[in-house]
Amino acid sequence: MTGGASDRPVPRALALPADGGCRCGALRFRVTEQPIASAACHCRGCQKMSGSAFSTTLMVPVTGFTLLQGAVVQGGMKSPDLMHIHCAECLAWVFTRIPGMEFLNLRPTMLDDPSGFVPLMETCTSEKLPWAETPARHKFEHFPPPEAFGPLLEEYATLIASEE
Image (cartoon, rainbow, N blue to C red; front, side, top):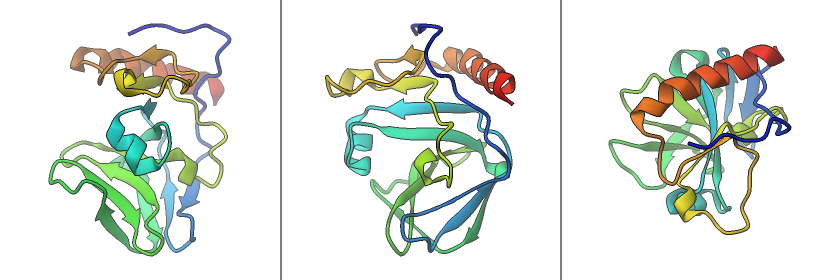
């Protein structure tokens, strides 16, 4: 884990409730609890799923996320351990759910106002494209080790609290 410069943009708290939806508008959701972390993932799977250099994620407590309208389908690499959820109409990738976890990974660009999104960490930097850069404060060649999550979540909470 490496630290970053103090002049980098920092994650901001969401103005709650924060609504969002898919590209076609058929699916709408609401976030009612602050995310617990933010990230950019450079793994090849995320590159292929997003059609971009990396995917972006807000880790939102499951209890703070509600589908308001629309139907969803599981897409991407289908697995009982990792569920990529898409709008059933336009197939936009909206969030990922890991069964048994108390959070889901929301694509922040699906928020009506994603302007406050800044990744706290980058994952799978060993697979990143050479030109892909983010202002993330922490970079991991793979995924953070379990012992890093507590401090990362604490740092994120502190950063967004200072922005509320």
